[in-house]
Length: 272
Ligand code: MN
Image 1 (tube, protein in one colour):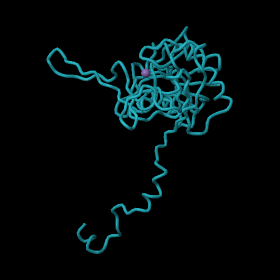
Image 2 (image 1 turned 135 degrees about the vertical axis):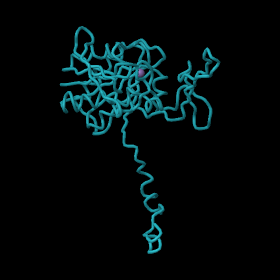
Image 3 (image 1 turned 135 degrees about the horizontal axis):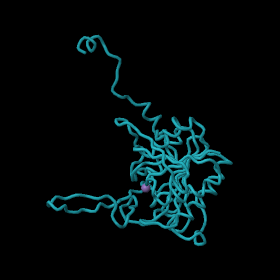
Image 4 (image 1 turned 90 degrees about the horizontal axis):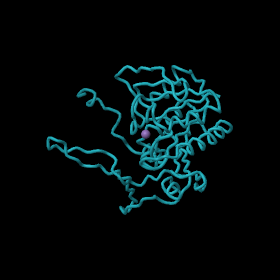
């Protein structure tokens, strides 16, 4: 088995070190990581700069590559240039911090798995809840169990898994919940600060994330059945995601409507 590991926190993040340690028992690892912190990179790719791959190592000499590209670039480079389709599974993480609800859409960790799904590869993104989580060994232990199951059973083509663990010891985790994204508006507050010259600047990611329900009231744990709720209750959340955002419910209605194009008459052609 050949497993690609990537992340958005870079080579020195404990999450990816523990993950690599746990997954190397399952097969041959290919580790391709961004050369800097890329949290929040979502699904962006590099088009106007050259991409470089530099050989390095992780753990006790396990070969790895770093690139100046994004997490999605890491996956594409691995799939197209390094392994040419000989990848059985992509695991992205373990991210330092939750990727719940709308965070999942902003996350480089999650969208690296999304990029893999576009190549038809089974993929899993793993994150641990909290601002400064510590339970990366627990996350890696679960990642290995989940990876084994995905390698055995596969995933529907185009589906990838977004996994979030509570930052708890293994014996305090209540189980695994299959969830939906808590897509109620997530206000990730900015910190507003002043620079030494009296200018104002903003830093995304204040100390306490506040999630809002659709009626505008704040909630810290989302609705039952969602990823936020499950993690808040002490469960590991597993959310199946797909990247085709086509609004299939609206296709019929929109196709029945007129969209500004009529067959031109002679005058229209003359005046065009
Ligand atoms: Mn990150």
